[in-house]
Image 1 (cartoon, rainbow, N blue to C red):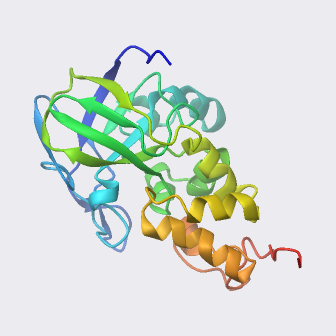
Image 2: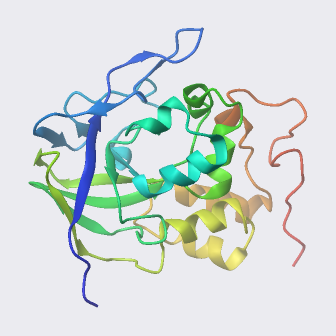
Length: 251
């Protein structure tokens, strides 16, 4: 396989904490372009912050990449809202053209400046996107379309500049693209063969593998409402999605 040419960054972005709702919930989703080199450590870029460290950030979510390729599609669907007129609309650290969820697989490694990044997981959108775009279902739209972006863990730390290029240097599980993983997590959600493969995919973070294990054990899909809507719907029982039972058939 001949690897493609290096990908130029559209922007390198970092964000400070600021309130995202009327309760004063802090978030680092509002990211702005870095104007010069930034140090990338094992938990992210210097100066980049996350408001909820239990669900955001950490070694397996050190860097968020969102394809600039998707922006025009979003404009076509929701209009040219203010957020889409600038880079960083989805809280991404890396904005670039030429890589999408269908091109990138779990375990892919990229050299970027002095750093070495490894694709760790897809993004699970949360309710903060609803506030960010002032659309009550924006997080659900992101999840349903598969235009989620993905995260990197940092294998080698170092300085990264906005004018650096990304070069893929290794593919460890090319069959497990972000798009394929998304399909079995959110579309064909109880495919036992796929779930077993995901559970055995050691390079995935433990919590992602646990989704697969629990679905195989319970024959149902976890409730997404708190993550997507910001609160649990009283009409959505535990172990179901959107109020519909997704149990596996017997046998």
